[in-house]
Image 1 (tube, helix red, strand yellow):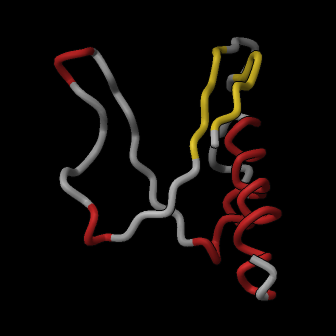
Image 2 (image 1 turned 135 degrees about the vertical axis):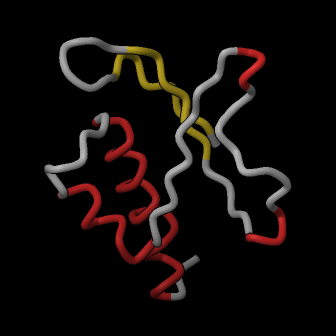
Image 3 (image 1 turned 60 degrees about the horizontal axis):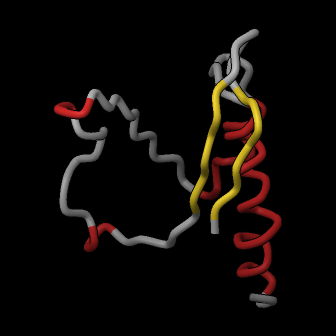
Length: 88
């Protein structure tokens, strides 16, 4: 599932942003991540335990785009909370 956020960014600038959701396990990991340096990609891999996501959203010390906060809230509304209640 992918969502295309029209304009999003931290501060006064914005950029197109596509987000994807996939369930993965540590056993599926084949590389450290971070993007393809030869293609100019610079991707920060940030692992946040599902139990700490809501805290992350509210942490004003961490600069984050609104789209990321929306994506985390989407995860709780559509996946995490439903799994916890057995409705998924």
